[in-house]
Amino acid sequence: MEEFLDKEEIRKIGKARQHFLERTITIIIAALGLIAALAWDEALKSLFEKIFGPLSTSGEKLIYALVITALASVVSIILGRRFFFRKENPRR
Image 1 (cartoon, rainbow, N blue to C red):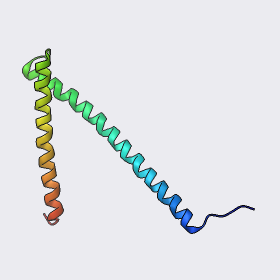
Image 2 (cartoon, one colour):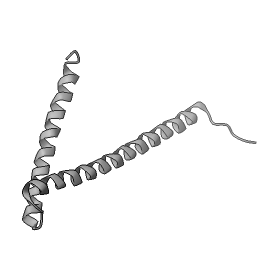
Image 3 (cartoon, helix red, strand yellow):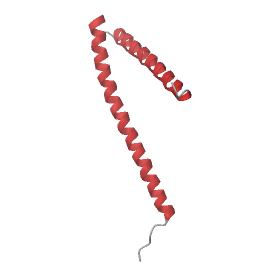
Image 4 (cartoon, rainbow, N blue to C red):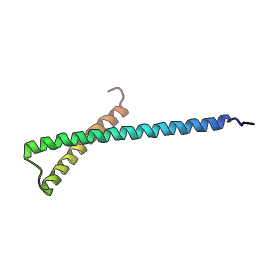
C-alpha cells in the first residue's frame, strides 16, 4: 500500500523547491550581470583607447584596469550611500 506524505514532509519539499528557485534566480541574475559587465568593459576600453591611444603594453593595460577599478569603486560608494540613506530615511 502507498504511503502518503504528511504535512511536515510536504512543507520540507516546498521549502527545498523555494530554496532551489531562489538559487537559480540568483545564478541567472549573476550571469546577466557578467554579460553587462563585459559589454561595459568593451565600451569603456574603446572610449579609453580613443582618448589615450591603443593599449599595447602591459603597463597601459594595468593603468586601464586601475582607472576602471577606481571608477567602479566610486560608483559603488555613491550607490551604496544613496541606498542606505533611503533605507534609513524612507520619506526622502
